[in-house]
Length: 113
Image (cartoon, rainbow, N blue to C red; front, side, top):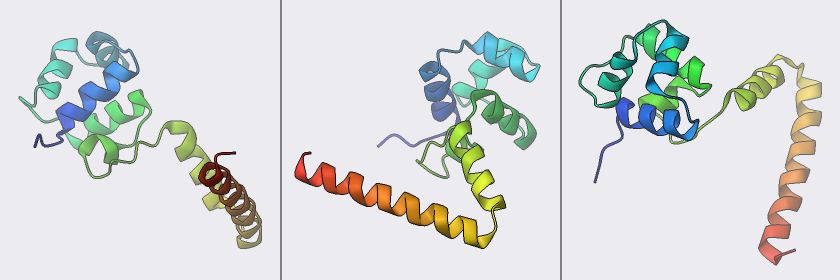
């Protein structure tokens, strides 16, 4: 079984987003060759560079590092952060709305509607 490495995840996300190594490197202020070395797991980036790469690709650092298989894009992360800023009453209203929507969606999926 192939292990998930930072390099594997980096290459996967970069290709999925159709960004060249050079374009990604420019976004973080480096040369394209260094991205290739990261992807081949020849070297590991510092935590600061890894965070910049995650930011440039608009994914979580946890996903790139292999800590989670849940790929959260920047839009989802921003929404979660906005929800965290709400007071408890508004959070509970939002959770109730989401729970109702998800319950209905799952029911439709289960019954093929």
